[in-house]
Length: 496
Image 1 (tube, rainbow, N blue to C red):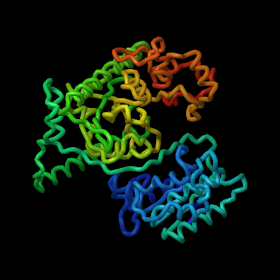
Image 2: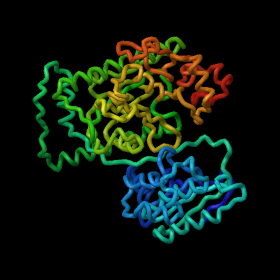
Image 3: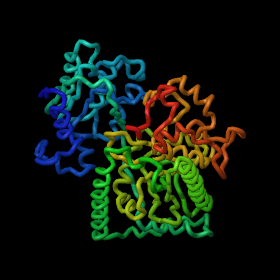
Image 4: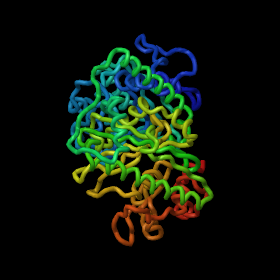
């Protein structure tokens, strides 16, 4: 089936609803006898992972992964027995399996993305295409359709839907593709007992007993399911209010909640019977205090009142402990783990109402050591992403050093819209010349460096880095910055 029509006719809306990317305002859509319009959010995600595949007009491949790795990432979110080599052979890319995106032509990139869909045993395949997405300007759709039809014929997709329309030259849409793993969350009793430990000065390093009662009855299970359903419904309502904005953290203005998840994974764990871990948790709280005060003080310089509620020891509902059955240092594969945990366990609307908050930022804090190869970063929200939660992955130690308060502030400013200044970034229009200018003229900006530039080391009792007018502009503290025009870089998300 081919859906044709002029811009604005509703082609994308129709396909998005059929693919469960968007929800219908009325009516029913049935696929294989199932009413997909009645799906909960997680059911819709599983439907997209296992029933229907999307091939977008943009390539949406991960530039740091090889051809083979780009296809392999679907294995964590789909049930498939197909071999990657067989899939790549079917679409003519087996010889390219170890190459990176920059080494391929546009057509090869598209074929590799199609290979992801081959990995799935699909009921249907939805193809979004445009004249400008073809190989050269002569609308060579024929070879691509042959590839897609081969996928349908060989791997059993029951229908193929294609949208054809010229793509807008100045599209600002962005996509992020990732895989996921299963989350195992500690019981409520465990979390409560661990939270109580934070308020006790004396701990026993040898005492690692588990007070959790494993004998739960069916009534408890039912109540827990109802609690999750209630949280999901509340979070669905919250998501609707922010999905057209810039995510869960808009600007520092107003009240911002900091919700902290002390996350254990397959490599690192939090053990609250350990005095060392207790001290680390208090250090995390102290670093947050310095970071929040830093942002508040800088906001005041621009006449903006910025308040942060972060103290998870004083406010026990701003913290939890969780086990993740995955590698949280592998940031290409963990976003859905974090998002689903928040979606199922944090009643965001209730917290926002209780603290009269305007924003919320989530910290996933890992108890890493010097062996950690991950680097702290922030998953910011882009329009069209599944969840609008701004999540900071904070490794207690990365680059073999304990992270200082400046890193906490740096990552929080990302959540509000500030970019990194230390590398060229086409998303913001940064070139190598841009970076050179910033290094020469803004050498102490917190989005460029987090160490004390005079001492050349991290400091832990204060933040000595500056927040330049450009950083204030990017996080929405001011509407004007002469450097934007001077350097010919992109405007702040808060301007338009």
